[in-house]
Length: 392
Ligand SMILES: Cc1cc2nc3c(=O)[nH]c(=O)nc-3n(C[C@H](O)[C@H](O)[C@H](O)COP(=O)(O)OP(=O)(O)OC[C@H]3O[C@@H](n4cnc5c(N)ncnc54)[C@H](O)[C@@H]3O)c2cc1C
Image (tube, rainbow, N blue to C red):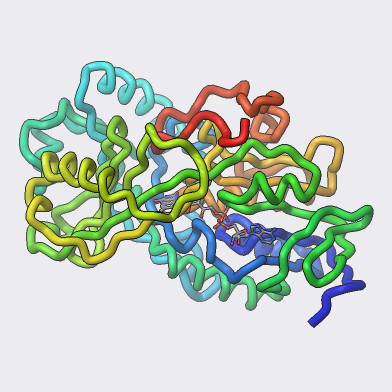
């Protein structure tokens, strides 16, 4: 079907969690005609391949706020749209292994509790008691938030598909964004006039930006996930989620086994969906040292996918410089824990220039210089993402 000569109040580019929830929020805000264009199918990007971790224990106030908002949204979904993204409150432990990490964790915790996050310090013995699968005596303690948890990424795609259809967003799969026109967007099926345009793209956002004539310092990097076989010791009641920040390794319960994710900080950025067996072996050794029961377990599932990132590991939410009708949105590799909050804030910014989700005034593209360096401090609680963009 041709979409030439169409008119919409807003066109959203990209059917991942950021674009889809943004289109839903724009429609819910009262726009009559919202069109979502996706060059493949809904959820085909990072969104369906994620681990689903949702954490309020952010490293900056913005990260905390987006985590809080998104978690609350996940909890409210069933009432709002009749289904949900499968949020499970599992509890999340960030252990410390050095005195420097302990000091940083206490500082962070003061910021987080000031913002209302129910995070607490567990000393070494309490960490072991709360986490019987962990090899005892390994940590100097850690921060723990019982209200952190995870969603099920495929359920999230199903939830936003339902939300889009119920709310009356017009979903166009297999329609690619080709660029901006004077009055809207160009697509692979013809132009659409639109008062507002929201650009998303996850790991492909820089390419979407180039089509729009914008330089967007966002990139992609390989991230791997594996799921172990089941084991009675890995019953969810015995396994809080854990983020071994220094190693860039995290895990959570999954179907009676452990799901663990990892990023190689030494790997150059770029799209990559091949499994890196060597790095997997390294992370399996680290996991086995901390959770000995995993040492002898086979893997039930294993995949690699490209994760989005920004150089300061913070989201991008802002209008394009010099083009007020165009808004750019990126979750910076945290689209499960921040996605709905980023999406709602982007919808608000597109409509009014600001948002009650959080203050977005520092989060636009204008925080980056020509080389993609940000004037903001890097979020310290993130995967070991690259701090530069592949092409820069
Ligand atoms: C392995 C892995 C594990 C992860 N685990 C977590 C986690 O535990 N917690 C967490 O918070 N985050 C996690 N993430 C990150 C999270 O998945 C992403 O931040 C989030 O999915 C990004 O959503 P998005 O909508 O911006 O991008 P995407 O989901 O990639 O969607 C962008 C869409 O834009 C489309 N598109 C691109 N170009 C065009 C074009 N020209 N025209 C039309 N459409 C276009 C793409 O096809 C794609 O569907 C993980 C990511 C990966 C890969």
